[in-house]
Image 1 (cartoon, rainbow, N blue to C red):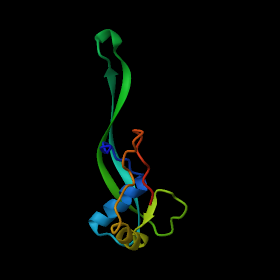
Image 2: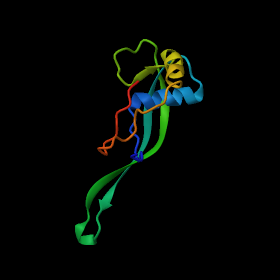
Image 3: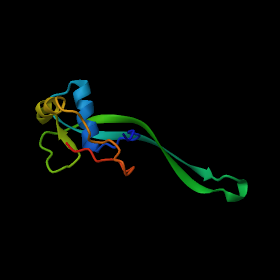
Image 4: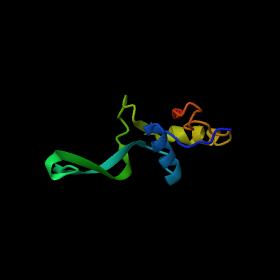
Length: 109
């Protein structure tokens, strides 16, 4: 049997899981990230130093969006998840597990 070594999650699936974890069952939400950007001179040696930038992910956030927002594929309606997440919890999860090919399987909501 192949050991699972990696999971891959769609941004909507991460948002849905966080909504479930927080007990949020109403409203429209999307996943957001807080970044810090650093600009400077980077290089492994002084002769190799070049201008560059670095982004650091500080935290993941759930951002509530207005109820009239439509058509955004990143927005998750929490009121539709409570039933579907409860149904999914009764069956074993295989979404997101690494396939024998080594490529992560894509998780779908």
